Length: 265
View 1 (cartoon, rainbow, N blue to C red):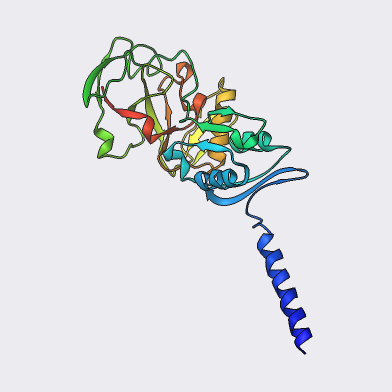
View 2 (spheres, helix red, strand yellow; view 1 turned 90 degrees about the vertical axis):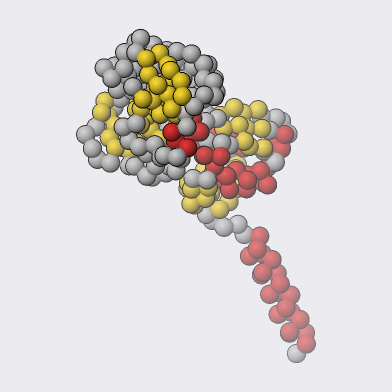
C-alpha cells in the first residue's frame, strides 16, 4: 500500500512540474528550435516587452504614453530580430543588435519622431514659455492659416483641459527644431477606418489621404493593434490642406507628450 501511495505522489509531482513548465498559449515569449514565438492577448506593450527581456535579455525603452495600451499579437519569427521587427512594425524604432542577443538595445520613439519632411508649419524653436507668438510658414493649414499669420501658443492649456476634436495644436518632435500646427482629427476611443486612400472617423464623411500610401500603412498598422481605435493618450492630427500637409497620414498617431500646446489663431 505504501509503495502504491509513493508511486502516486511521484506521478502527481511530475505532472504538476510538467504542467507548470507549459507556457500559457496566450502569453508566451520563447525561443524554440524552429524560431521565436510571441503570443500575447490583451497585454500592455510594457508587459510584453518586460516578458521578452526576461526571456532574451534584450533591453527596451518605450515612451510612457505608449507603454500601457493593451494589444494582442501572434508572431512566429525565424529569430529574435525578425520577431521583434514584426512586433514593432509601424513604430519608429532605433535598434542596436548584438551577436549576443542579450546585449541588444531597442528604443521606441514617439510617433513620427524620426521622420523628416518638407512641412514647415511654424517657424522658430520651442522654448518653455506658457504663452508665445508664432509666425506661420507653410500652406499645410490653408485656408485657416497662411504664411505670415501670427498665432498664439498656450503651452499650459492641456495641463487642465483634454484635447478635443477640432483643436488646433502645436506638435513637437525630437528630431526637429521647430513645431508643426495641425488639427486634432481623432481622440482616444475614436474609430478610424482607412480604405482606398480615404480616412473616416466614427463613420463620418471620409477625407482623402491618397498619395500617402507608405505613411497611411504606418497609421493602419498602429491602429490595427488597438482594434482601429485611437489608443489612450494618443491623437490623430492632420492639416486642413491635407494634400500639402505632413501629418498623421504620414507619421502615424502622436502622443500626448508631443502636444506643445493649443493654438489660438
